[in-house]
Length: 341
Image: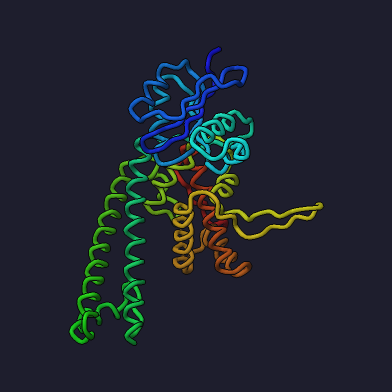
């Protein structure tokens, strides 16, 4: 019997492989396969369906396996957990591989699109920059806690208080002086690194046609365009803009029963970083509305009046997500509709 489905439990150095034949019976069970032996093992198999849990290294292995004619499908780990027979086999790598092999054959399973190498290169830029932003925020929080402990005014990021601290470091008691000085210097170095990554991201966005097209709508910066172009435009399940907004978590959660529709808060599903960029872009749109009289600005202004600021922000973010999907889906430039006469 030939192997038609294979489940692989990924790890750093030792992998577990579980393959079944066309009768659903185990035909390839290897609880321990070293990293250097994994690719030769998969390469000698006839073309089959390979399932793996989506993680940092899954996309690399998926690209490698596709080169040998296999169909690779990635799944979120939470969708694989129900198929693990923990009561009978316990929790181990072999049981995980068997659960993956079972889950990948389910007809209604949701799969994660495989990222190409150039997509992961761009994501590397964004994740590195985001890490520096988080580190800068943590530095200012640490500085605020230290200063408040000695009864000084609270420190806010990029505020005149920081400049005042730099000018009066000598007045700080004891070892507080070098501590505060080092934290402020570290924050300045992080600011410089973040600014450099902003420049690199903007340059990379200008070199990509899709990203340039996405920067035309209001509220889209170079980082917005790159994340859009590198993420959801390749997802085959997203058939319209409404599904895109729901996939990003910008749609309300539904708690309906007995024929009564109940809509709650937004789900916050999907890519949290991309959603935060869309929300920040929406806030920038509202702050720069002024007296603009185009159709989009009049709609946004009336939305704030009717539903409040934050609901308007989410609605504008969802609208921008749907506009971005339409621009990428149909390959056309964004055209702002003129004011009706």
